[in-house]
Image 1 (cartoon, one colour):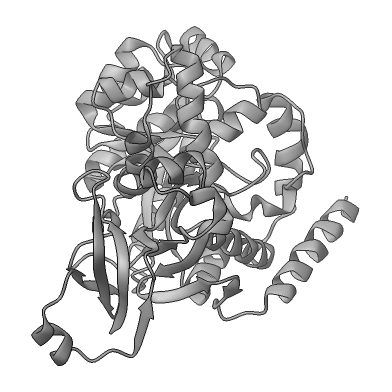
Image 2: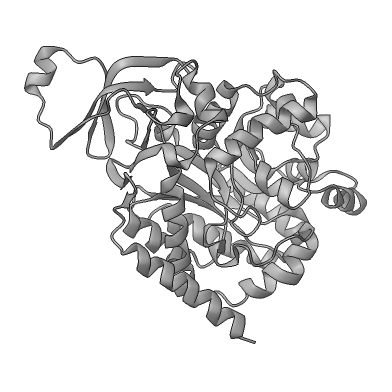
Length: 429
């Protein structure tokens, strides 16, 4: 077992209430104890490692609920363009040059960045999944993948093959959710087929949704309804779901989310960088809609930093609502932990409690930006950054600690491979 003691513990089981002078024990990939142990419990326990946190905070690992991890190769490559031009003129042509080996190496780079910001799981939508899975499993990192198909109805067979294949890998780190890229890249037949698969497997679905006004207007022109309404009409949300971005929503759209228990993943940095807009998160929260938080890919963000997303989530809602009390730290911390777990159907990864997965992050409070300790949850959202991440544990294994990575590969080799790949791609016709 591993013992973390002399800690402040933010379990997220009761909002942002923090236990003082408490302990968290892990056994294998599970949390085995939370609280203040008795003398007898300590005497009977056998620990392979004991760490005095000296008052630092331990909390559930952060969840990146929408990303395209291997897009690290396009970081700072295609900037300062509106979404449609960015996608069709820059991103899609370069993505055509990807292969499984390139995805494998580029994913490893993304995982390093996730770990530095205390992220223990990513909801990934991308290509060449075998390479992606290999990188995650070798690194010890948890991921849920969602379908990313676009085009015609004939591609439905890929989704069915993938849900069978990736939900039976034998690895507790990997799972899969049905999904399509977006309404504007998919035929009506493909969208209807997604609903049919959702009913067949009694499964939730995931997709980009209402990211720009143009997307919504064109969908209404084609079908007489918004993307959200279209997805519901074909049964895609019959068993819930997760949608990404959700910037331009009607009241009817939000009511569909509420009724169908669809999780809204907010991607503030990407929506700002692409000038897409600000999602109505505060309004959705009032309606009881579950909110999660994501970075989107490193080509549209360009970072994979959940601390930046937390800060932007709250401050943008304050400006948008013209209300400084909107979207408080408690809401943000719930979104980045519990909300993210629900978006990915990771029920065992939401809070710190015995029997839950040992996906944890230790936040260093002994830094200038975290002092004084007037309000620790507020400090995390408003003041903290990646430099405050002392340790990241996934499935009971420490993958990052005090600036060092333990992912089974040399960090500088990962960097070199990423640079080699993008240079090769730039020179390919």
